Length: 205
Image (cartoon, rainbow, N blue to C red; front, side, top):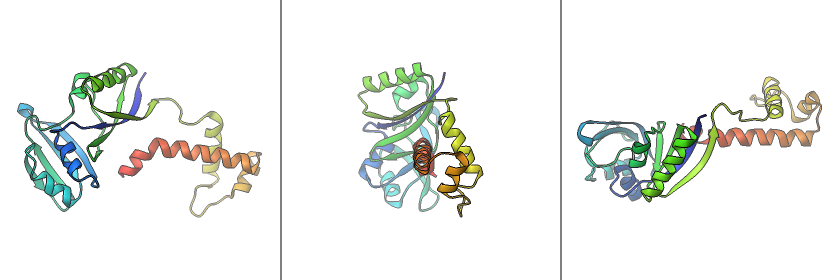
């Protein structure tokens, strides 16, 4: 069994992404790709605003920075300057990229077993790193109930979510042979589940 967890973790002091984003709390630092180098160093491709890019150039954790344009850069990180935090390395987990860091908090999506997730949380507690679990979902588990899936497929095929809309709520309720109010509740529940599940992917673009 595998899970997909979405978790926010406060990066420790001395971590380049945590330190820079704490100095620019209104900035969003998106790490597009990150990889380790020899001797404990690392490199990362990022996107952010010009204010945070300027801060990065002053950090002791950053060996060098190559600004590609006003919003993109490649940073080279000194040994010990921060990469994947120790609890990740101990458990052997790798977050999906891209991911965001805002005001010292990193938002990660991680796929792992329930056992590894439990061990990861234990390591976060040992390291005294604050965290917030946003969601946990078992992969392969249907997002919608069988009834919701049936309504979703019919509504989609009939063009309920098309632009312009091809079928009204009243017409769709007749097709499904349920009341307008019941259908409205069903559609709202379906939309809420989908939005909640894919919010981070949509937000990150």
